[in-house]
Length: 205
Image (cartoon, rainbow, N blue to C red; front, side, top):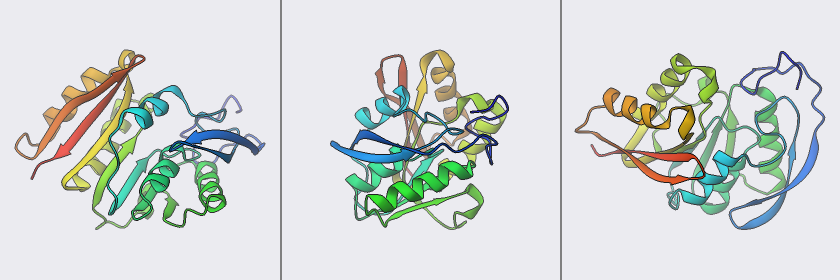
Protein backbone atom coordinates (compact mmCIF):
# COMPACT_ATOMS: atom_id res chain seq x y z
CA UNK A 1 0.00 0.00 0.00
CA UNK A 2 1.44 3.35 -0.90
CA UNK A 3 1.81 6.14 1.64
CA UNK A 4 -1.24 7.84 0.15
CA UNK A 5 -3.45 4.75 0.16
CA UNK A 6 -5.92 3.74 2.85
CA UNK A 7 -8.37 0.87 2.92
CA UNK A 8 -11.18 3.41 2.56
CA UNK A 9 -9.62 4.94 -0.56
CA UNK A 10 -11.96 4.58 -3.54
CA UNK A 11 -9.23 3.85 -6.09
CA UNK A 12 -5.93 2.80 -4.48
CA UNK A 13 -2.89 4.08 -6.35
CA UNK A 14 -0.62 1.18 -5.45
CA UNK A 15 -0.23 -1.85 -7.70
CA UNK A 16 -2.79 -4.54 -7.02
CA UNK A 17 -0.31 -7.40 -6.45
CA UNK A 18 -3.19 -9.88 -6.30
CA UNK A 19 -2.30 -13.15 -4.60
CA UNK A 20 -4.06 -16.31 -3.41
CA UNK A 21 -4.48 -17.03 0.29
CA UNK A 22 -5.96 -19.94 2.23
CA UNK A 23 -8.33 -18.91 5.03
CA UNK A 24 -10.95 -20.60 7.19
CA UNK A 25 -14.48 -19.30 6.65
CA UNK A 26 -17.67 -20.87 7.97
CA UNK A 27 -15.75 -23.87 9.25
CA UNK A 28 -14.01 -24.74 6.02
CA UNK A 29 -10.70 -23.85 4.41
CA UNK A 30 -11.09 -21.91 1.19
CA UNK A 31 -8.70 -20.13 -1.16
CA UNK A 32 -9.38 -16.45 -1.79
CA UNK A 33 -7.67 -13.68 -3.68
CA UNK A 34 -6.40 -10.64 -1.84
CA UNK A 35 -4.24 -7.65 -2.79
CA UNK A 36 -2.49 -4.57 -1.51
CA UNK A 37 -4.37 -1.29 -1.13
CA UNK A 38 -7.25 -2.78 0.86
CA UNK A 39 -8.05 -3.44 4.51
CA UNK A 40 -6.32 -6.50 6.05
CA UNK A 41 -4.78 -7.93 2.86
CA UNK A 42 -2.86 -10.61 4.76
CA UNK A 43 -5.77 -12.51 6.26
CA UNK A 44 -8.83 -12.24 8.46
CA UNK A 45 -8.09 -9.41 10.90
CA UNK A 46 -8.57 -9.91 14.65
CA UNK A 47 -11.79 -7.90 14.90
CA UNK A 48 -13.47 -9.68 12.00
CA UNK A 49 -12.40 -13.03 13.46
CA UNK A 50 -14.10 -12.11 16.74
CA UNK A 51 -17.28 -11.10 14.90
CA UNK A 52 -17.37 -14.31 12.85
CA UNK A 53 -16.81 -16.39 15.98
CA UNK A 54 -19.21 -14.60 18.34
CA UNK A 55 -22.16 -13.44 16.23
CA UNK A 56 -25.22 -15.71 16.18
CA UNK A 57 -26.28 -17.67 13.12
CA UNK A 58 -27.33 -15.25 10.37
CA UNK A 59 -30.90 -15.31 9.04
CA UNK A 60 -31.47 -18.07 6.49
CA UNK A 61 -33.28 -15.76 4.10
CA UNK A 62 -33.64 -12.07 3.36
CA UNK A 63 -31.03 -9.44 2.56
CA UNK A 64 -27.82 -9.55 4.60
CA UNK A 65 -25.36 -6.65 4.55
CA UNK A 66 -21.60 -6.65 5.07
CA UNK A 67 -20.82 -2.96 5.57
CA UNK A 68 -17.20 -2.28 4.61
CA UNK A 69 -16.65 -5.66 2.99
CA UNK A 70 -12.96 -5.52 2.03
CA UNK A 71 -11.95 -8.69 0.19
CA UNK A 72 -15.00 -10.38 1.67
CA UNK A 73 -14.47 -12.51 4.80
CA UNK A 74 -17.80 -11.47 6.31
CA UNK A 75 -19.85 -11.48 3.10
CA UNK A 76 -18.44 -14.84 2.04
CA UNK A 77 -19.14 -16.31 5.49
CA UNK A 78 -22.73 -15.04 5.40
CA UNK A 79 -23.24 -16.58 1.96
CA UNK A 80 -21.69 -19.90 3.00
CA UNK A 81 -23.80 -20.09 6.16
CA UNK A 82 -27.05 -18.79 4.63
CA UNK A 83 -27.20 -19.97 1.00
CA UNK A 84 -30.85 -18.94 0.76
CA UNK A 85 -30.14 -15.29 1.59
CA UNK A 86 -29.08 -12.39 -0.64
CA UNK A 87 -25.75 -11.04 0.58
CA UNK A 88 -24.69 -7.47 -0.15
CA UNK A 89 -21.04 -6.53 0.28
CA UNK A 90 -20.67 -2.75 0.36
CA UNK A 91 -17.42 -0.80 0.18
CA UNK A 92 -16.06 2.44 -1.30
CA UNK A 93 -12.83 0.72 -2.36
CA UNK A 94 -13.20 -0.54 -5.94
CA UNK A 95 -10.34 -3.00 -5.55
CA UNK A 96 -12.10 -4.56 -2.56
CA UNK A 97 -15.30 -4.91 -4.55
CA UNK A 98 -13.47 -6.57 -7.44
CA UNK A 99 -11.84 -9.02 -5.03
CA UNK A 100 -15.15 -9.87 -3.38
CA UNK A 101 -16.69 -10.54 -6.80
CA UNK A 102 -13.74 -12.76 -7.73
CA UNK A 103 -13.84 -14.65 -4.44
CA UNK A 104 -17.61 -15.16 -4.50
CA UNK A 105 -17.43 -16.45 -8.08
CA UNK A 106 -14.60 -18.87 -7.29
CA UNK A 107 -16.63 -20.29 -4.39
CA UNK A 108 -19.80 -20.54 -6.46
CA UNK A 109 -21.64 -18.04 -4.26
CA UNK A 110 -24.06 -16.50 -6.73
CA UNK A 111 -26.05 -14.79 -3.97
CA UNK A 112 -23.26 -12.28 -3.25
CA UNK A 113 -23.52 -8.78 -4.70
CA UNK A 114 -20.57 -6.40 -4.34
CA UNK A 115 -21.27 -2.71 -4.83
CA UNK A 116 -20.73 0.83 -3.69
CA UNK A 117 -23.17 2.17 -1.07
CA UNK A 118 -25.07 4.31 -3.58
CA UNK A 119 -25.73 1.28 -5.77
CA UNK A 120 -27.80 -0.55 -3.15
CA UNK A 121 -31.52 -0.09 -3.95
CA UNK A 122 -33.07 2.59 -1.74
CA UNK A 123 -35.99 0.34 -0.82
CA UNK A 124 -33.89 -2.67 0.20
CA UNK A 125 -34.69 -3.77 3.76
CA UNK A 126 -32.10 -5.76 5.68
CA UNK A 127 -32.61 -8.88 7.74
CA UNK A 128 -29.13 -8.46 9.25
CA UNK A 129 -26.04 -6.28 9.15
CA UNK A 130 -22.61 -7.65 10.06
CA UNK A 131 -19.74 -5.19 10.05
CA UNK A 132 -16.25 -4.45 11.21
CA UNK A 133 -16.84 -0.73 10.65
CA UNK A 134 -13.98 1.56 9.58
CA UNK A 135 -13.50 3.36 12.90
CA UNK A 136 -10.45 5.25 11.62
CA UNK A 137 -12.43 7.21 9.03
CA UNK A 138 -13.46 9.45 11.93
CA UNK A 139 -16.62 9.87 13.95
CA UNK A 140 -18.47 12.07 11.47
CA UNK A 141 -18.16 9.59 8.59
CA UNK A 142 -18.74 6.57 10.83
CA UNK A 143 -21.83 8.07 12.43
CA UNK A 144 -23.24 9.02 9.04
CA UNK A 145 -22.72 5.45 7.80
CA UNK A 146 -24.47 3.88 10.76
CA UNK A 147 -27.43 6.25 10.66
CA UNK A 148 -27.84 5.51 6.96
CA UNK A 149 -27.91 1.72 7.34
CA UNK A 150 -29.23 0.78 10.79
CA UNK A 151 -32.75 2.15 10.11
CA UNK A 152 -32.98 -0.20 7.12
CA UNK A 153 -33.20 -3.24 9.38
CA UNK A 154 -36.52 -5.10 9.26
CA UNK A 155 -38.46 -5.51 12.48
CA UNK A 156 -36.75 -8.37 14.29
CA UNK A 157 -33.55 -7.86 12.34
CA UNK A 158 -30.23 -7.09 14.01
CA UNK A 159 -26.86 -5.57 13.32
CA UNK A 160 -23.65 -6.94 14.81
CA UNK A 161 -20.74 -4.49 14.88
CA UNK A 162 -17.28 -5.41 16.12
CA UNK A 163 -15.29 -2.52 17.60
CA UNK A 164 -12.02 -2.51 19.50
CA UNK A 165 -12.53 -1.53 23.12
CA UNK A 166 -9.70 0.99 23.13
CA UNK A 167 -11.03 2.61 19.94
CA UNK A 168 -14.30 3.60 21.56
CA UNK A 169 -16.61 0.59 21.51
CA UNK A 170 -18.43 1.57 24.68
CA UNK A 171 -18.89 5.21 23.68
CA UNK A 172 -20.13 4.11 20.25
CA UNK A 173 -22.69 1.84 21.92
CA UNK A 174 -23.96 4.78 23.99
CA UNK A 175 -24.07 7.05 20.94
CA UNK A 176 -26.10 4.57 18.89
CA UNK A 177 -28.56 4.15 21.77
CA UNK A 178 -28.95 7.93 21.99
CA UNK A 179 -29.56 8.33 18.25
CA UNK A 180 -32.15 5.60 17.70
CA UNK A 181 -35.65 5.61 19.24
CA UNK A 182 -35.57 3.56 22.45
CA UNK A 183 -39.01 2.10 21.76
CA UNK A 184 -37.89 0.79 18.37
CA UNK A 185 -34.29 -0.39 18.92
CA UNK A 186 -32.41 -2.29 21.60
CA UNK A 187 -28.66 -1.59 21.73
CA UNK A 188 -26.46 -3.87 23.81
CA UNK A 189 -23.06 -5.46 24.13
CA UNK A 190 -23.53 -8.94 22.69
CA UNK A 191 -20.03 -10.31 23.35
CA UNK A 192 -16.51 -9.35 24.38
CA UNK A 193 -13.34 -11.11 23.28
CA UNK A 194 -9.64 -10.27 22.96
CA UNK A 195 -10.10 -6.52 23.47
CA UNK A 196 -13.07 -6.27 21.11
CA UNK A 197 -16.77 -5.69 21.71
CA UNK A 198 -19.52 -7.08 19.52
CA UNK A 199 -22.42 -4.64 19.68
CA UNK A 200 -25.96 -5.73 18.85
CA UNK A 201 -28.51 -3.28 17.47
CA UNK A 202 -31.88 -5.03 17.22
CA UNK A 203 -34.96 -3.48 15.67
CA UNK A 204 -38.01 -4.05 17.83
CA UNK A 205 -40.69 -2.11 16.01
